[in-house]
Image (cartoon, rainbow, N blue to C red; front, side):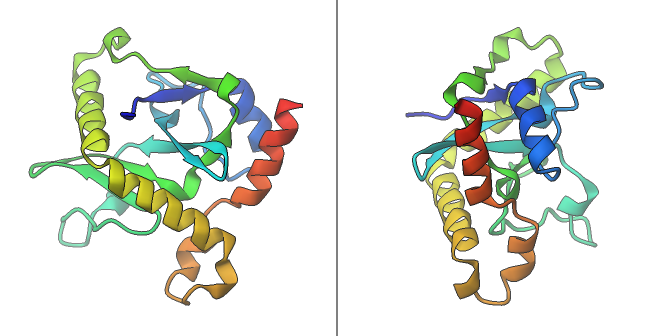
Length: 174
């Protein structure tokens, strides 16, 4: 199955943020685009995990202006000329099927934004195995955090607690 972009309901994001403040906000009051919580779904541990996209930030570049290399928590969606955005695995969350809304690129009115999203979609479809591997590796590393090397500890510290979020997701569905 090929990746497609989805949006997570404000209701579910607000529910999770009351329990875990580090969950990325939908910014539903101020958003122009659905940008902050546009992402893809990956199956992990029987849950639909939403991996959010993020716009490029200055922290995504090295001191000499080059795009950083991928890590355990981030994949940089780029081509030879530019960075389109990032996949933020440390912010992935389990989501009930009922709270996932398909994003239709054809409904996007802003042509410049539409082109960026199109390039991101092309990137994720071309890098499916890498995305699956990164999601699984981070999930396992977070779950088994005591057995990881100290080099990964700072990245795991800024990663959401997936097991706790799975409990919240299950409670939301009841």
